[in-house]
Image 1 (cartoon, rainbow, N blue to C red):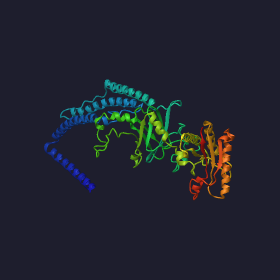
Image 2 (image 1 turned 90 degrees about the vertical axis):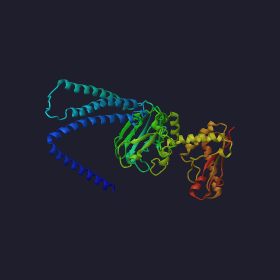
Image 3 (image 1 turned 135 degrees about the vertical axis):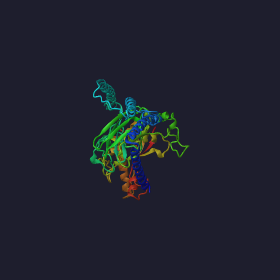
Image 4 (image 1 turned 30 degrees about the vertical axis):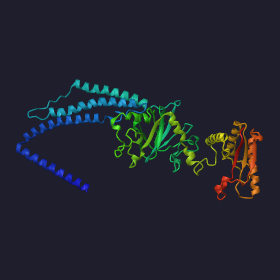
Length: 500
């Protein structure tokens, strides 16, 4: 129905224009062509002046009315270290081009009025004027030289890469339809290598997990954090089509091109809270963020730094929005510690893990830290149950008391703890499931406890501080009804008997 109405309107306008043309033609025949030409010239000249005033006035008034909504004006000053230099460059460019715009706009319509057709007037043709040639050659050349030199200096400053010895954090942004995948380095401070051939549903970035640097890399959720005052280097790439990494408040914009890595370096200088505080000073940001909820949060309270894609990358283009929060170093460090390794949480010990069945260096360190914290808590606890700790990563050959090679990492942690607490006395307990003969299970559990005790004494722990004992299947922690539960019952643990 709407389409039909539009079509009818177009037809009606066409008919009206045709009729106006016919009326003007008849008027010309009645009044005479000379009179019509004189009237048209007069009206065109005056209408040119009217348009000049209305248009130029509208441009100036609208620019003034919406100055606070334009990036770089009002509250939206650059929130990065290089933001002011870019804003200044745009301001100077606007200043000079604005002068040219106003002058040419006035001259265009003033000349249309002044030199409108008049009966008996003849045009004067000037073939050459050296003074004019010099003026409109030298003036633009000087202005362009200033803008180009200033722009080149700003470009070299903004686009400079980091030096290897600088203190910076490097993150990676991969654009795809329709999402930004952001990767942070782990505690090693380095991003692991990628290989597009390794891309799978479980490994969307094609990370090479044979590279130890990729083991601790992290891919946080929707909200991302950056530390205030620290230089950030962003690796930028795309998986499918052209995207554009755009952080408008930081004056950061760089295309993400499939197969062609790019980068941008910037330093955020205003925290999210500080930027909100500045917005609070402006009337237009003290209105409800949701017009349907007059009592809800104000616009300045809901402000967030936004990562967008400034390329029209498809119908889902709008959904590429991500939130960056700029916080103090202390807040960033606290958030950073809560993030988990993508590899260790999503890929480790799965079929596509190239290190399946191996103990990695990163795990050795993580386990040692966790063991130390658990040991400290057990020593200080007054709860008897809390003084029994499992040796989670100690294993034996099937049906024997021979320790597996990887058991040494856990037992070395126990050696370290026994050394740190020289008065500690512990019971080393071996347990089995209920499969097989009970007496045999009791013997096997005692042998396994003895094997652990021997490992400790071989590394300098006095035997007088150890009480190896086997319990067989007499102390299960779960029903022996499934393979999973039986695995829980086959365990080795130790209990702190005395710490004095």
